[in-house]
Length: 199
Image (cartoon, rainbow, N blue to C red):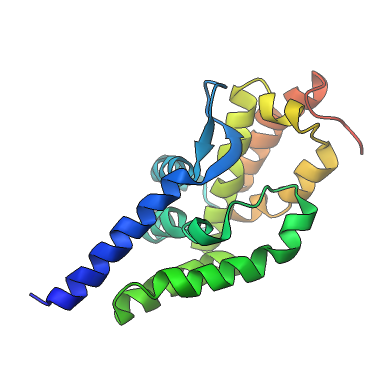
């Protein structure tokens, strides 16, 4: 046994427990509490196991699930950036890059490289796996917003133009899931006034 290697791995395992403390803006389906980053990652991972058949291209499901499980770990240091907070988005990239350097450096070198490459792949969003991961990253909170009768959208005075801008690449991972989301989650909330139609 390489004791030093295991020590680094355990340090990382404990550090990422902090993801459970990173709150998000999306309510859980009960509409009572907002989800945290760890719940968001878990939910998308399971959804990917079930919905990967709707990907535009054949994907490596394990790689996609792995990507989803780690993509928000940087928020342990960088914090969550609300999708429609234009000011926070200006510094998001730099905050998250610094966080990735710090967090993944806890691991043994080979695993640091693996995790960083996976995170970079998600950020670049060019592979079939990354595209589907981004689809899930948009689909899951939209589903929860709809499940809570638009509670989060109502509170934030959501505008359709901003939701469409946020989702402009969703169809690149799955045309089917984007169409489902638009027809079943977004448009009913536009029609009942939970989302302002500002087109």
